[in-house]
Image (tube, rainbow, N blue to C red; front, side, top):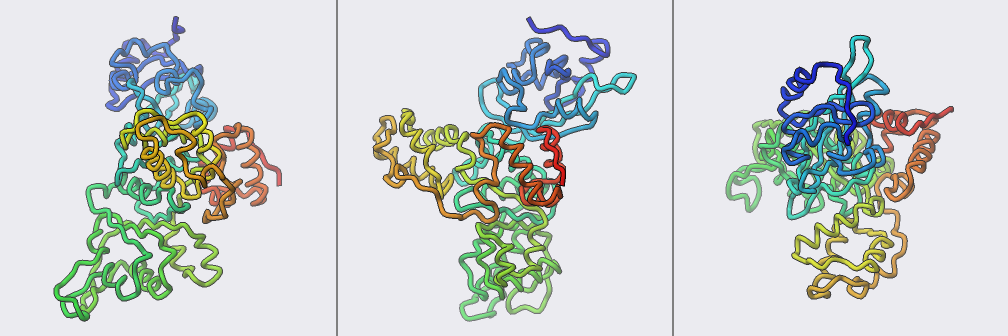
Length: 451
């Protein structure tokens, strides 16, 4: 039987306050029990039966789990009752149909007359329900490894601003997917998302593509042409692999980023556009700055906010869900054998999620409708060896591996603090998270550091 709860207010008044919220909302006590929930919360997580929710533990309802969410996510309830302050995190909930629902959970303290926290108000706002975030036939959101959940939290945070963003990650980690996510969750979502592949241009072509030209600007310019920078007005301009730009092109790009004005080729008139800039790279731009191959002023301009995508080998707990997604997409129903799954787990995936998709599509063709076995996997997967150092910023130990116990994460954070002599700002910058997020994680894990 669900435990009966003592309400700090009359039940009818308490329920009417809860029902005033339009989005899913519930009140939770210190022991994770739900003491009241609105109809929207019940509709999503309990099949419309609000009475079946009250008295149950929140993680049983929203996570369909017997264990509190703090095992793999930051728990707002623990933070709210400990600090008496509001806390917000990204969580991976499960709806009544068993579908993943990525949400922003905002925990607010509910105080008694003496100022003591007696309940937490939990506001839930959906980021992506199930397969909603699906771009170019690939899904951005998948899995619940801590490293990936931190990235998703960062993406949500940067989407709320207009500041330039630099997305870093190995080839195949989904940098363009992340950029599209930022755009779709921003105030510019109804405007254009314009992609510029920086590997494709020489200086003249880059200027023409980015800024446009007028008729007769050069041989072959037979009509006026709008540049991609102008197309992205009030939208998002995504510069993919910005580290590939030649120095002369970097200078031209820097000028428009600093002044906000540009000229079409062959035209004297200055134009302007309101553009949100998102860049991506698989190279270490800081090293390039030191080598003199990337302008320091441009680096600081594009690196206002930073997001780093974890390689697949550091989120292997997500492999079953990613595998299922790609197999479902091609209509393969019989799945992967245990032996083949173990072989995939042992492979380092230097090509990351894109490589996983290609491996599975090849295996499906060979399996001809049967269960995918080890024999259907490429030989290089079975002869797995450690990948070369391809990640732009972090060594292999600098991501928290999902398969390791939490105590290793605490030790990892201690090592990061020691590396920066206790400076949380520098440690957070290297981890690719905000200082506030790092502080919450240190507090949750009980990590202290004495310099």
